[in-house]
Amino acid sequence: MKKCLVVMTGIGLLLGAVSANATPEEDRLNLVAYFKNKYPDIKTEDSIYGALAFDPDALSQYKSIMEFPPFLDQLDQGEKLWKAPLKSGKTYANCLPNGGKQIAGNYPLYDAARAKVVTLEDVLNECRKANGEEPYAYGDPKTIGLLGAYMRTLSDGMKMNIKVEGKGALEAYEDGKKTFYSRSGQLNFSCGSCHVDAAGNRLRSEILSPLLGQATHWPVFRGGDTLVTLQKRYEGCHRSTRHEPDKAGSPRYNNLEYFHAYMSNGLEMEAAVYRK
Image (cartoon, rainbow, N blue to C red; front, top):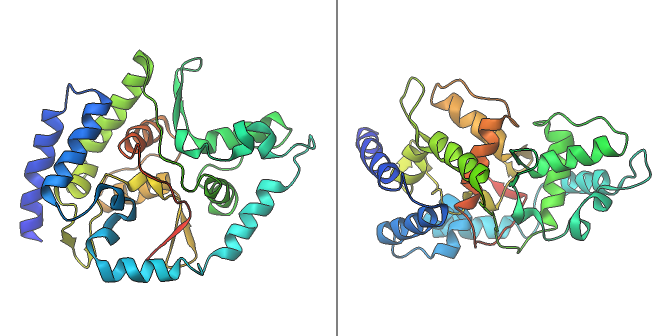
């Protein structure tokens, strides 16, 4: 543990400083090069498996579990929500390009007209409001969680394709990057402390996953049936480092997701996966 903390103290701060004035694409390429140098035996495309990429046995078990996932009943519930007519008679597919298929990798996106980052959950709730329904609570795993989980499976195999274009988009991206690399909380950790500096190391009994590829597979089902969205995971991480979390859907977390997702550009998505 002491060795891990020493590592955390150094590299991430250096990486954040070196890339402070970089473009988003330079940030991403620097991250790819960093992990290739640190772990030359792990292919960049395998980073979509997170910490499993460091443990062949665990990865094999994961692939076996995913042949018959224990959460199929919950995805069926998400499919029912997706297909159920709204008060207008329309469905979510009527609100989205291409009927909602192969588009999740474009989110979150920056909406210049509204000067803010818009997540896929925002779009689903906006569809509800436009068709006479009340929006779902952003972090509710039984409603927006299951709906988003199923909807994201319609983009499995799509490569992440986040755009950062224009001054406002760049400012939102930089704000998310600042949140990721800024130390905070009683333990004085940043997201980068664990997921850049110490990625691949063990913290207690768990291997820490790398930033690269993290945004490709959410939401996840932990332990088989507990759905966790990406922003609820942000809340949990902040609590673990004794930092006061924002609520899922806040501007700060939306900007963090914007930066986070861009770092996985070009990697294939597979939503609603098993994690222990």
